[in-house]
Amino acid sequence: MTANSFPDEAHPIAWPEGFKAAASFTFDVDAESCTIAHDSSSTRRMSLMSHQSYGPRIAVPRLLKILERQEIQGTFFIPGFTAESYPDVVRRIVDGGHEVAHHGYLHEPMQGIDSATEASYLDRGLEALAKVAGVRPVGYRAPWWELNWNSPALLADRGFLYDSSLLDGDAPYRMAVAQDDARDIVEIPVDWALDDWEQYAFYPGVTGSGVIESPAKVLEMWTLEAEAHHAQGSCFVLTNHPFISGRPSKAVALEQLIERVKAMDGMWVTTMERIAEHTKATVNEIHSHARIEVPSFPGAGASFKPARVRETALN
Ligand SMILES: [Zn+2]
Image 1 (cartoon, rainbow, N blue to C red):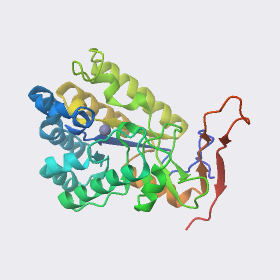
Image 2 (spheres, rainbow, N blue to C red):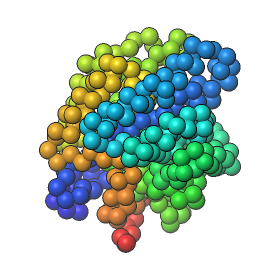
Image 3 (cartoon, rainbow, N blue to C red):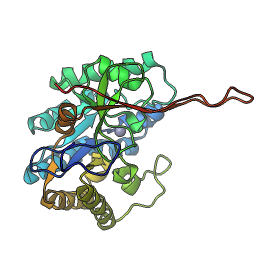
């Protein structure tokens, strides 16, 4: 790799000319979907629904104004159900020049589901985004960042360029969709420390501990993360939920963070799609993941498919 490769030693990447690190501001527009998916009776709770609808109704317009003022493009991961419920909001996001990406249909729980069920969620989400906004997304983020071993192949089957749900790197990389599959997609890893939910989310009996952190503390914490990514030349990916980070003081802190990140010398502030395109075009290493099976006792030893790296030709 070239001179501005950096020490996420597993995932070397050279950023475009003139840049030494990358940053992307992402927004998961869960709205009501994440509560309904876990408890369908939550639709009977008027206050809970109002807490969730604050996202598309009040917060997204505010956040779009911030992005416009800061002259940056964001990436919005939108469940199909949200798109169908708030079509005008989704069209406004598209009209603002931002990226719309896939985030399930009803923000379904992903743990333990089979491949056919997961495929149906993907297809229904794609249909909704196409119908509402004429969008065919290239990016995917699993609800709750919960990717299954089958997920990468399902994404490749549908032509997705990238996923952003895994937690095993500081920089984007190409991942084999399975160990014995020649296809790959780009992975742009995330980090629970860079998700607003853990800082701010609270609804009695639904989520959170009751502690809602100060935006000043969160701004400091996220600034430190951005500075560290910038210093080592990796990729800062912030995940916001409009119903959380679109509230007044949090939105102010977010805009201050955007200003700070933009001011970092050589920081490429862009969409996840652009980062994924760059990764696909310039990285020739493809990583397969270690797959661990539970050992049996007495058994024949560990069953473990180790991670591998292979090289491919660039187009
Ligand atoms: Zn979500």
